[in-house]
Image 1 (cartoon, helix red, strand yellow):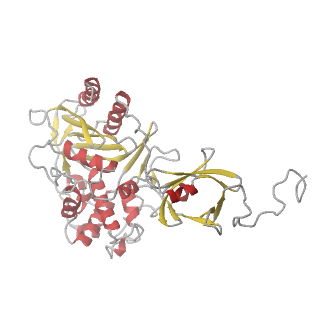
Image 2 (image 1 turned 90 degrees about the vertical axis):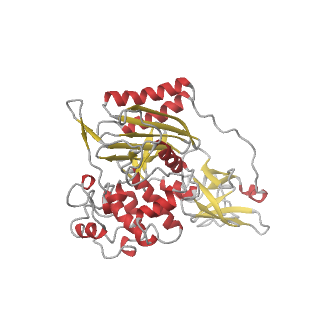
Length: 456
């Protein structure tokens, strides 16, 4: 990066460390799958923290757990709409689905009953299950977003039942190790920051505890470094390194539930927090445990992301600072659009492209470089979706109104495409083409300017 950009990023980090009185902070910016910049302010045991200094991740742990759950889904071992009872039977939460647990829409209580779990040595699954026997469901499952740490404790048990090992061993072997995240551990190892609370009215510190959370550990146990968390940030952006198919990571980034009303700016996908800010759609997660704050976000469209780690219990605006690091990078060193170049095209698909009509409304069907089709209204507003081929003349909707719906190509006796059947909607080359199977038929008199039934 340009020295002026690096100075602006460091200044933003320094501003928070100073004004918010944080013992130490480290941050990084990633672009196109690499660390483009990292910086540090404050001290850990008298020295500047480095890119290999561990901090506690808190709830970023949930995203790692979610990735393992999605691996189980992709292997066919579970379905997102499965009730919990199918995989962990006999609980009082059995009707909540896997997807609801991942998206915090299960209705489960936010915190585990008993002592404050973040500052208490945790017990095993049986104790957590027993504590949830009554009163654990606070909202109708599926009715609303209600953040639940408990839900990820439950998902940790789902992983353990399927893998025959602990959730931690599973995510270490199948997620962290393939991503090269060797410095992401359940407890600090080697160089690490200690967690502190900063006195609100004096410049003095109080050490915070960091016990093992037991069955609640999947909600916030992990520690990590700038280097490792940068790899995770890139993973969320789509650099999945074989841990998940990039399409599955994209599915995790899709909005499931909104957290702030009709005009959403904050929401949640499948284990990932989603932020909409100044035209950007960011994905990642924040983290908070006694003594620590953390955040990771990336814009998948530009592949620019940022992360921040701090050893303070509260007081630093980590989410806004992380967003600011992304915005500064994009403003000072904007990413150039990819250069256009021709791409290989299946000539059999070309006759399907061009102008189609749903009733009298014109649509464009465009072939994308990856072989997918993009159906959009000619006016630019209305229902639009991308489609992936699943058979010779069959395509499946990937997003928008027609997500999951089937588009079938209809042909005349000579094999020439003459209509598209999209979830019973018939698209034709000309409006209401009488040669196509228009539902209800086409008036044999055709188009007219006046006269006829109901016309003056």
